[in-house]
Image (cartoon, rainbow over all chains, first blue to last red; front, top):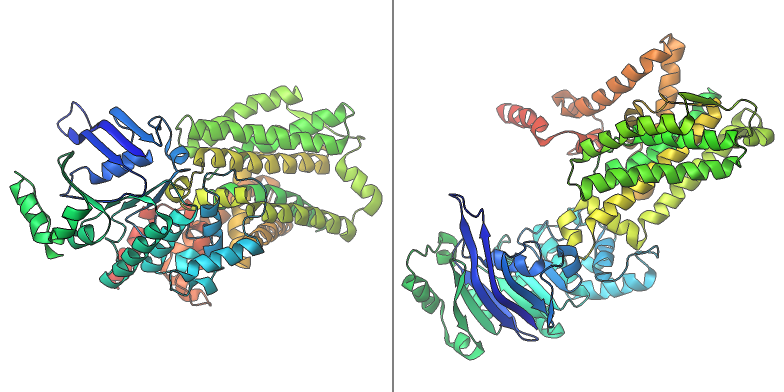
Amino acid sequence: MLTIDSVSKTFFPHTVNERRALVDVNLELTEGDFVTVIGSNGAGKSTLLNTVAGRIHQDTGVVSLDGSDVSRLKEHQRAAQVGRVFQDPMAGTAPNLSIEENLSLADRRGRPRGLSRGVTKAKRERFAEALKQLELGLEGRLKTKVGLLSGGQRQALSLLMATYSDPRVLLLDEHTAALDPQRAELVTRLTRSVVEDKGLTTLMVTHNMVQALEVGNRLIMMHEGRIILDVGAEQKAQMTPQDLLAEFGKLKGAVVDDKTLLQ
Amino acid sequence: MITAFELGLIYAIMALGVYLTFRILNFPDLTVDGSFTSGAATAAILITNEVDPFLATAAAFVVGSLAGMITGLLHTKGNINGLLAGILTMIGLYSINLRIMDGANVPLLGQDTVISMMRGFTGVGWTSVAVLAAVALIFKLIMDWYLQTDNGLALRATGDNEQMISSFAVSTDRQKIIGLMLSNGLVGIAGAVVAQHQGFADIGMGIGLILVGLASVIVGQAIFGSRSVMQATLAVILGAVVYRLAIQLALNVGLNPNDMKLMSAILVVAALLLPQWKGFSKLSLRRRSSSPLADAAAPLTTPDAHLPKASAEKGA
């Protein structure tokens, strides 16, 4: 349903800083696929996500959703079908709006935003119900400004908002990397359950090899703008972080950063 | 005194417009200097041509919002810096306003205006102040309502976190244009009513108006708070009245009306500099991490401006 067909992207072409972020990348996701993406720094993981989201437009190749070419659509137009959670816990929510107002914005994804009331009583009950799943007690703080929440709470809320109106594709860009281990664990657990419940087609970038193996039904490894490893569910279940490190070791010039090794 | 209250409440409509761009959209919009006069010119010329004054005031809203649309298009589609986009529209409007009025001013002597019709019922006194207060309150309530709608929430989120709201399928370009149109429409209405209040429209009446708007918003929110939208809009209206009373006081003390632009500038500079002064936080009675004045002024100070303060604190 999500097809990335021979997509290439070069930053600063024809200069000394030229960087080929994506080189002829092909990737096909079927309905309900949950793909984890790993790779060294500068491998093109984030560029891949941003290309799907429409934040970056590829030089060549086609991105299509449900068979229709979305390459020319702008970020906000694609967002009608694509949900995102960013690495920065502050990025996915509006700090000066209350929790219920943020959820109301998420609720209207892909529908016209007119002059009807943003938060009604009926909606408020739905929001409280959804917030209960987070088990953070936020259902009792609907009118609290989101800026007053902690990073972990905000990221959990970002995840709820990104998935609230059932997007066709969910993009997660190292969304647990900036959290402490306990909160990261919570957000990972929430991610698994919401993706499973709603059967969302998901692309998740991560630095954490354990997480990359535990979560999802498929794993791809990227290096220098190319997909160099694509593992299905059965093979993935047998793999250990050591196997992944060995794969990295085979690559010439791949630098695994300290953060990845320490995990 | 009565006049100061009346003018304060009329200028409050303009201040609500400035609040919409400056606080909600985080966009200091200089178009208002031009669109205020455009509103006044449009209404004045229509009234002298026997158009119903209420209809003429409504037309001022349309003309003001068109000016806002031009700034919005220059900024979003033309990728021109927001301040410069506002200045470009403001300068261009100067010529257009002269064209609308076919001269530098239009007198409204002996014409039926919204103010003269109001005077017919209330005379000059506290009743006329009450009527204008009710009008300002109606505009406030409409704005409160709008900012709670789906579209209003999208507008607030556009000023709050652009990355977030575009990831929820909102065109931030479109929301900015809507915000600038509404804001300048309100400014146009205020210009139209001010012209009818003083009995003429004049090419220079909008000069420096952005400072009046900013002073009203910053002073109002520093004194009366801005914890919710409803509180903030009320604070803006009261700020506009306080500002006008302060001007009246300065005049009573013996300052010349020509000094008022300098007074406005000094007032805004003071509002921006005071929160950066170390002693200010000690003076502040309410012990909070940031003072309401600092909050109100934040969008207009650059991050660099806070650096010396931060390093000074480290040294202490």
